[in-house]
Image (cartoon, rainbow, N blue to C red; front, side, top):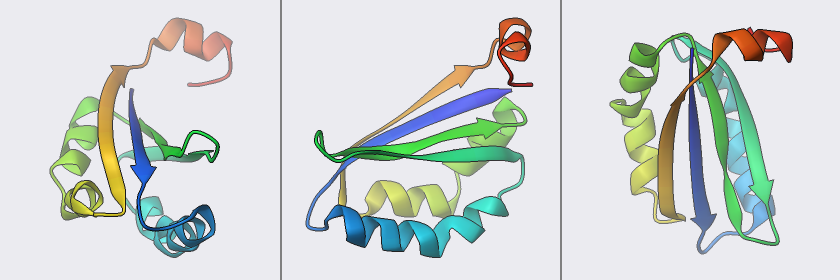
Length: 100
């Protein structure tokens, strides 16, 4: 499994506007091939938002990063300083702690 951590800062919109958009697009994320789960992240005090995505495998994650959906996220002027970091999930200890 792979985990993709995406972070960005909001610019020109506030948290409530951001949450409205999140609620609108959440069903589309639920349809992404290979996506096991997405956690929606918010640190309002630090103006840092994003998501933690758990993928079936690295290829599913790469397919998402090559998609129009990800391109729209990375080109959205309301999201600045975007980072996307891929991690391989360590299966053994993750199963012990409830993932897997």
